[in-house]
Length: 77
Ligand SMILES: [Zn+2]
Image (cartoon, protein in one colour):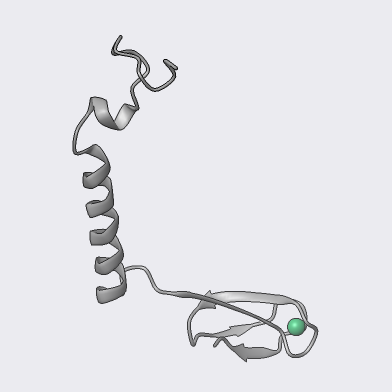
């Protein structure tokens, strides 16, 4: 019966040892995400397959990339 009733103080979750750490991390994550998407600091990535040979292509969204295998130009979605 003592599984959740230990009053020794040992074995507490780490987040309880440092109050606010979890909330701070969440706030930072939201701030960085809004900053990147709002100012375009980190362009959204896009991927597709080459229409010519089916090779996987990746790059910034709406960017025209040239297939390294067949030199066909494809605009990313
Ligand atoms: Zn290709």
